[in-house]
Image (cartoon, rainbow, N blue to C red; front, side, top):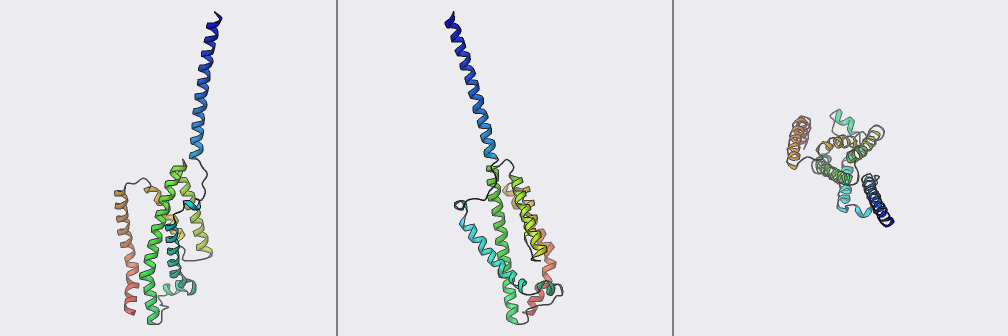
Amino acid sequence: FPSHDRQANQDTDGDNRGTRIAQVVEEQSITGSHIKSDLPAKPILGNERIILLDCLRGFALLGILIINIVGFALPIIYSESMKISLAETWYDQLAENFAAYFVQGKFYTLFSLLFGVGFVIFIEKAFARSTHPRFLFVRRITVLLLFGITNAFLLWWGDILITYALCGFFLLFFVRAKPISLFIWAGALLLTMSALLLPLVQEPLENNLEQI
């Protein structure tokens, strides 16, 4: 019965080869998915950037420069603490109020909006490319915090990067939040911050209006 033995051996070899092929395919699929999900973080390519957002970022930075350039040239930190106005003439006061009400509020708001948009874009790509998307964002925001600390203590007393970095850590709590939850939280935070900051800005606002 040699033919039957050869046939049995061939069937066994075929089954073994099929099993080995299935194991190899499974290992490759697992390895491939692991490699895909742990791609190293790197800056996006030029053709992947959103030109409109880059233009808006540059425009917002220009507006922030207009606001901060007064602080670069004059000792505002001391004049504000001593409640002394550096605007001696009516047109200086007019320019100061115009910049405060029509430039500062608008460009800070725009820059904050762009920060949130950048967070959404980054976290979506991180979820698509990595198994640790939150860690990537924490690493990114920690670097921003270090830049802010260096800037605040060595270069510019009016640093804003620290504030953005600290707020960025709290954004992680809202990654998977529903739109209605985001709307409620945004309204609650807006009302709370307005109530806390109103006493701080009410007196300077009244003084400026009286000077005009």
